View 1 (tube, rainbow over the protein chains, first blue to last red):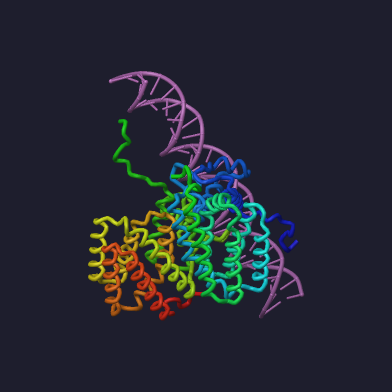
View 2 (tube, rainbow over the protein chains, first blue to last red):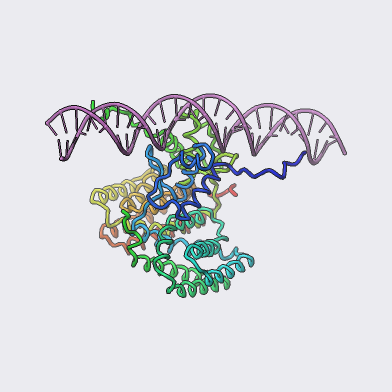
Length: 225
Length: 225
DNA sequence: TCCCATAGGATTGGATCCATCTCCATGCTT
DNA sequence: AAGCATGGAGATGGATCCAATCCTATGGGA
């Protein structure tokens, strides 16, 4: 047997597995801002030692999903309204750049997938599904950006506001959905035309409008800070 | 003795100490892009176990100073010219925002310190000292920004380009120093006037000019990528 | 009755040891 | 002689155990 066993169940570094699990739990709203994450809990639940959990927590800290305090443990960061507002302003400035870097490298396959995703979004039913699709849509438009630092930061900004986006979408109802759809379609068209200027402009507007609507819903942050 | 012993030599979490040491080594150019960082080496050198070193490497990864590959170890990232150029564009977009957030909270003490720093910069002799002062000057202008995510990202961008900035400054010589000084003075004045619009504008120009001059020195990236 | 000090449990941080993976050099085969 | 398989050394990933720190509940004192 010269070649490595093909059956091998890709073990993929325990710390990576733990990180994936926790990330899903936080993004899915299972854990929620301010909640504490105990090392032993997670270790026991996932059948691993505490060590990979510690490493996973460090990785998630890098992604903005966890904050660590020495000797006091890890918790999901709790953001205030102003903080979220500034993070959206950061998105307004960074994501258009990521898009410009991405557009020249977007394959036809990805363009097709984007169109299909937007179609699904317009058919969307529940809130959870919309959040998932919207996230996939936007992040896929950045798939061609091969500057790792930039992609990572954009992902990080999405991660740390995911919870509040969920709360916001749940509150605001579907009567403004047509606005999102119109913006997405214009964005898609600009991307298809490889017009980075237009694309940047539509994207910036899309994020800015969301930020301002979000600022009108302070109830999303009730009981926080 | 009810109060904690005041003499206590704040031990400050070994992993923190290791991270500090490595950060200084990388920013100081002792380690250099592409070089590998072996866990045991560092552990032995700093008289600690390998475990805090592993955690430190994760922290530095979050700061963009280290990149980790599973089962293959850690190394200092090596950036290409285009990558550095995009990182500078990110700075052009993010740092003005950080500055706007910071300005309203800057105390008189900090303003005084900034003026003093600029005076020192105009007196600067060697390259290493200039880099240090310039870094301290700019980061201090962001000291009032209490959005942790934003401050962290700005710091990260500075960190990951520090090496190339050093190479650039060493090459370009002191005949353009007066430009930097003029820009710094205008920036300082705008900050003192609490004029965020002007300050953002000067800062953006300052970074942009540096980026474009840097792009004229591809020799900084010789032998890389 | 309220506040502070103390002791205990709970939780995180660190060290050592073992398993697994990668990389390189050696030697065999063609 | 060239190329590939194999074995060993080195380095990283993981598990268990021990130490240091933090939080809380309890009890004593003003």
